[in-house]
Length: 179
Image 1: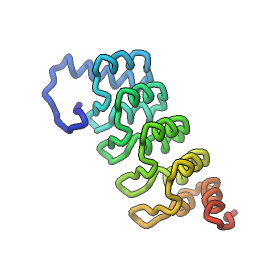
Image 2: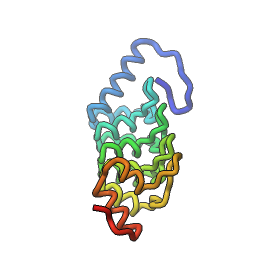
Image 3: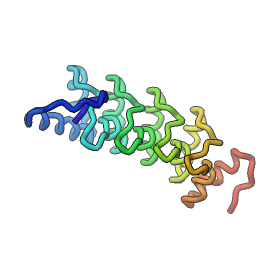
C-alpha cells in the first residue's frame, strides 16, 4: 500500500490488515463505516498493490456513496492506477452515468485518456453508452479527438460494433447514420 506520493513505507502486519479492511469497505460500498475513518484522517488517496486508489475501486464497483465520501474528503479524481486509468475511465467502462456525473462534478478531466490515448468519450462510444456520450459532450468532451492510433470517436464506436453511439456521433457530426 502506498500514498499518492509514491512512497512505500514499511508497515507491520496489523497496519496492513487495517488497510486491507479499508479497501474491503470500499469494495463493498460501506460508506457509513468509511466516512468516520475519513473524518479521523484516513488518507483518501491510498493505493493498493496494483495502484488502484480507494476512489478507483468505489467507481469500478459502482458505489456512489463511497465515492462521494472519498471525493468530499479530498480524493483525487485524476489519480491514475498502474495501467494509467483514471476513475472516470473506470466509471465510463462500467456505464455508470451517476458515477460519471459525480466525478465530473468533483473536477475529473472530461478529456481524461488512458495510455492508448482513448478518451472517456471514445470509451463511452465503444461500449454503446449513449447517455454517457451525451453527458460527456455536455461537459465539453471533444467529439473530434483522436487516440494514439489516430482513431476518432466515431471510429471507436464502429470498430466495436456499437450501433447506437455510432449513429449518435454520426448525427452530431452531420453525417447520415449507417444502418
